[in-house]
Amino acid sequence: MSKCGLKSSFVILSIVGAIVFLVGCSTPSAEEPGSVPATEASESTPAALPLPLSGSDIDENINQDTIDGYLNRNDVAYFETRMLYDPASFGEGTQSNLTQTLPGFKVVPYPYLGTIPIPLDGVYSGPNLYTIEWNGDGTIASAKPNYQESERILADLFPKDKALFIQCGAGAYAGFTKLLLVELGWDEKKIYNVGGNWSYSGSNAVDLTIPIPSDDPSRAFIASWRTDAAYIDFSQLHPIS
Image (cartoon, rainbow, N blue to C red; front, side, top):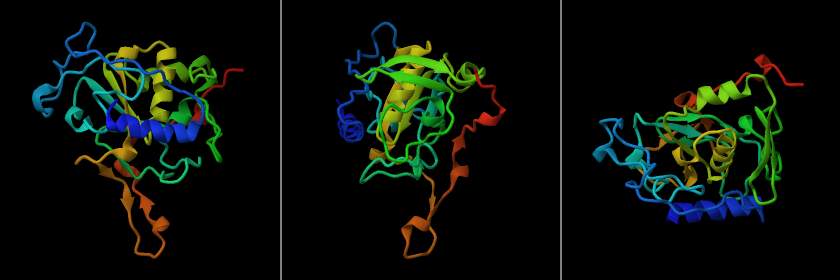
């Protein structure tokens, strides 16, 4: 596993305790049958890097250490699964505000999609598209739609004809999103958990912070308009009774 995968796993373990939310597997090379072709990659992508088959943990090949080489592709849809502000307490060294992301990553917060399986103080308790029952090993036992529009919304947000690159802060929300999509029929081989952006140190970060002159750094505010955020108005949806 890459350095990013190890870092992300340590952070996730500190959050979830004994829960194992993903089952690791090896990643075949790009030449093996079933890999996602790169023929439609953007010309701005150097060398049109091929996409290897994805694993089920943070990907060994495409992660926060290597993501700069896989941006701006026409054959990929990019997703940021953190909330703009997450009320949950993730522990020391983490951030509640979404202060940084990557270009082209659409903000689709996982807590709006499905039930969170980990017990966190202040965890989001608002509406979501699916109620998920989780097994003790972190796999999904069932995913039931809460709204008549739940399936349509996911289909609109996550195209099935492209590879999906999904990130979050440490890797957990991205992993939950992948598990939910696979449970609902998306192709696991085309979904990549590219890890936690908290560990990103490349040159393409989108900074969302605007500092305010003050002795209190918490007064800096977040430039959410710099992101492409998906807004789900749950008040317009039709609950399934």
